[in-house]
Length: 296
Image (tube, rainbow, N blue to C red):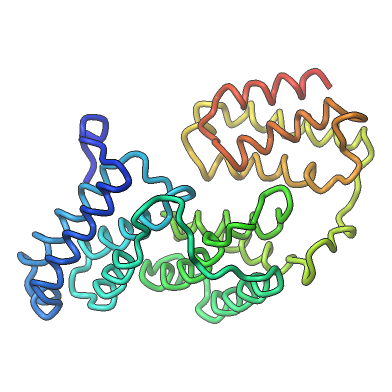
């Protein structure tokens, strides 16, 4: 599954859902007893489902997580057709696909419930151990998916207002997406969960910088951005988030940064948030960020 992405016909969201529903019907028609024992039958179905989804360049894990999860399980089955649990999970995910993008009826947690959810799965991660989770895809996806998906479906987790939870969600989705072998990401995820405030709004303990310290902070990360290079940072999400998160988060936690009093730092914080949370591929925003830092 690796050639001709640009030339492959791109579906609409509704067409992609229809595609998935069609192949779910075919899976049920063939039956899991057959598909988990007959390679030819399994590959015939899983390939038709998975390949077309794989070639849809617009299925972003942040924006279309429902479809992304279907694609992940379809590709997993393509490589491991004997795993009945994966087939069953795939069918469940397809059944739960929203007919129209943006319609979210998923149960909404309170902030405390979301924190409790994260703490529970952090304990499970530690129980399984990173040696297992960074080498066993099935074990990793079983944990990361259970953590990431409910957080993804919480419409109230705004990156400005609930940045602690947002960062947990970002790292969980990154691991769940295609980076389960990255031990550092698992460790960072656990660190972020451990540091979640038990109650929303209790972030006054975060160290407040002076203006000079904030400038020094920005200059340091501008140097790192240039060292990594925009060719890398606009194409590699892991590299980008590693830099942008370190720059953006401390600035977001500075309560004294306001647009009227500190427009320069405020603008830097804004553009750091753009590349960190919205679109790391936006080269113009990276360049604007560097320009603003240079002018400090």
